[in-house]
Image (cartoon, rainbow, N blue to C red):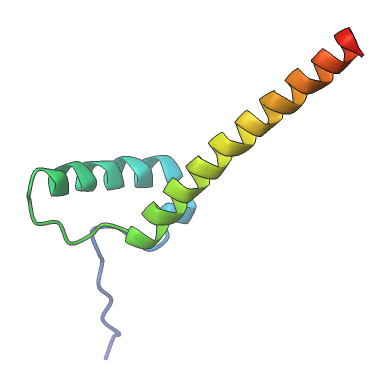
Length: 78
């Protein structure tokens, strides 16, 4: 007897295979959820990780800009 496989609305590998499609799909789901619709296929684990990564990326960008500013100020006024 052949093994049954079930295809979910969001394949487990979509996040790894196509981050842009995954993010568009998740954004759509979150907007629907915000409107009060029932949504069952939000990839909460990866959504949380991506939000944390964006926050850390922004923090590192600010730290890098401040480092460059301090180096420049030291060179000019050093």
